[in-house]
Length: 168
Image (spheres, rainbow, N blue to C red):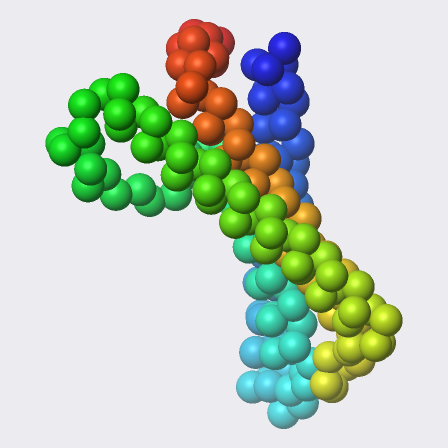
């Protein structure tokens, strides 16, 4: 049951990462347009900086959970030589659960912040783009990252799931 959920969840996160890639491609086109307008026609696109800021939040939000589920983040293993294998496994479990809890709280606070931002009508300075959708994207991303860390914690406790996943 867990493996089926993990596979479906991984596919959904992959699609989300592809969406972030599309936003990145659009951002590249925007930068090319901005450069062409500035240097060839003397008319810079004034909202480019704001759009770049907002697009970068979406790109990171879309890629972060997928990178986590693929174990693409850098990890430093300082304590494995100190602890025996069972103790290190439980330490790994505690780290994943604490990370998931921290990200869940961050996600919740981000949702509250985005709701307040939406209620206030918070917009960008020049182009008046509402900021709350981008803040919700960050909140959803951190929530998905928390789920990934909980799955990792379960894998630490039940390593059988890890070996089954490696076979498929």
